[in-house]
Amino acid sequence: MSDPKTVAPRTDRMIERMLGGDRLALARLITQIENRTAALPAIMRTVYPRAHGAYVVGVTGPPGAGKSTVVDRLTARLRAEGATVGVVAVDPSSPFTGGAVLGDRIRMQAHALDPGVFIRSMATRGSLGGLARATGDTIKLLAAAGYAWVLVETVGVGQTELDIMELADTTVVVLVPESGDAIQTMKAGLMEAADVFLVNKADRSGAPALMAELTFAAHLHRTSAASPKDIDWEIPVLSAEAQHDVGVAELLTEVRRHRAMLEAAGALAVRRRARRREELKALLLDEFRQKVERALAGGELARTVDAVMEGTLDPYSAAQAILTVLRLESS
Image (cartoon, rainbow, N blue to C red; front, side, top):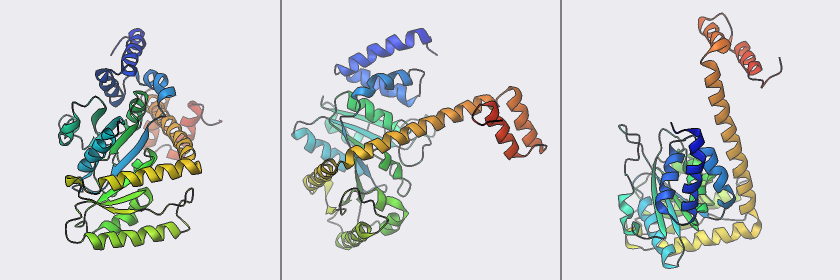
């Protein structure tokens, strides 16, 4: 492990280089975030004041729906307008290395040499919800580095990808005509996640039927009492053939329309405030978990755990005793 006395100066220099446009420095800082190094708090503390300018678009949906192609075509459209784009592609973890299976996103090679695009693949590393644990911090780094748009592509595990709701300003759910269980997926929660539905590979049979089902479901969701009412938004259902760049311009138009409505209603600021609160809660819970694990590893608390394991002390009494020792519960 690095000498703590040298971590901060080295980190500061790297952040300075990143803010000056050094992509290698950005990549190395993201690696530190993924590895949760000792420098992580210092990195996030330093970049935080600059970390709120990017508009985040999540792209989710089942495997094989063409999410990578959609992200690639959206990136090309945004770059044609002169906007800078950061891409975070969350991939399954390799069972051997723990790294991202698809590496640095070979399907987006067309943008690899574009200085206005930064692409980073991240492994889930066991994280549920379709997103890597460090995705949120990486988005902040990309925003601090000056990328105006950040596109986040989830891992593609279908019904468990709802974490994207906690990170994205606009979420695009990509489906394909042959996804016969699409409406079951809606029932599992993607209806709550979706701001835009995109039926990709729409030249295949079944596309009109799927779009009709989604349109009906979106209308019911809008009129449901359980539907969020911060903006009057009925989820649009679009068709596309992303491989041929068909329908992507319309998708970008709807993303921008959603953004404009959020901003006009003040809902974007409200959602981001709530997101920051949830982030704080998650950090506190993580720190608490680590503190408990360290405390349970030795001393008096280890004996308390042994008593529970032996059956001589009930878990409820043990939990109260442990919280008291950790000064989180009055004795």
